[in-house]
Image 1 (cartoon, rainbow, N blue to C red):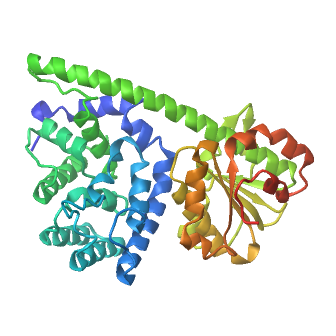
Image 2 (cartoon, rainbow, N blue to C red):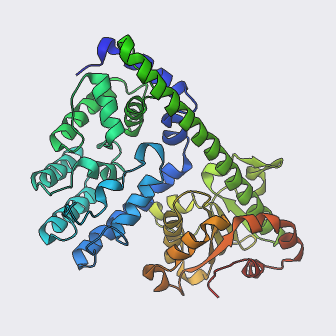
Image 3 (cartoon, one colour):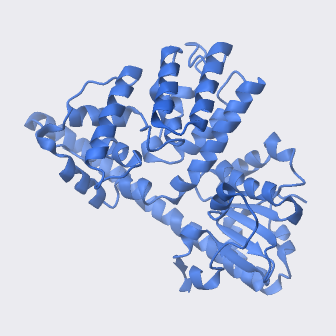
Length: 423
């Protein structure tokens, strides 16, 4: 399959040049995207363990799988609606992975094998095996999970991506068909290899282009005039919606940066060394450079390599002056996944259990109920002593910055501000 007149190089250029395309707002411009990979992998491991232990349950709600899909759907745009195929629909008895033990086991075995796979043929073999099981209601939407385990082997699969593929290649692939998915994947791998210099080894870049076409944000050449007008109207609406989302994302990013700035200022005033997430060191706020106010690298905590790479993405860390002793860790969650932030800090807490650090989620007051609900998860309550987790409302934190700097003596000053904490 080839796009008419081989439009791809020009389409890719348009896609990458548009500051509001998913290429720029999600694929290369989203910090949440990179942070999500480890959280989703951890959630998939928990799902596999729950199935193996018999504690997975008979509904999507409250399951470990819900955590995985929540982290995926919070990637916005491309993965909006990714959880829908996994909702339990009692009247239809689908997807049949909640009441059928053999189907549940097959689903768990596939996820577990993909977790340990190192080659694309291994992943493809497991997906083919799952497809052959013909589990009612469980189609290739599973690929959106496996993409986050193997982004160079497996492209995601949803309505807009399929529509974009069909429009670009003149195909007639079906959304719920495994055969259609495997056909799409093979074509995408070949096209991605041919245009690697313009795209990425990560198939998310090409999937994003198909998503833009399927969402009518990119209009293909060669449409008949009668069709073109309708397509352009839809494209205009899609562009307007995307612009509104881009403006909101920019506002949330600004609020996130301001909250980090306050935590950096307060930490320094309390006499701590401060480390900011490595991908945020280039930021500035109110004329202050994060790079000049924070440690150049993470202190030697003797962490496993994979844990260290995750810890380096935690928003703000406070250390005892001149020492590698962690005092506080903060994840600022203006709109992104609260549970994935918790998992990053929990990884750190479990790796340095002797340091008795305090861990905080910083989020808007409007998310307080959501934050507290996540903090009350049984898995966190059972490890309460080792993982001392609290909640700081970001609005109050910014309002009280000067007072915290002036009257605070040490990290205990935060307990006066925290609405839910470990005390």
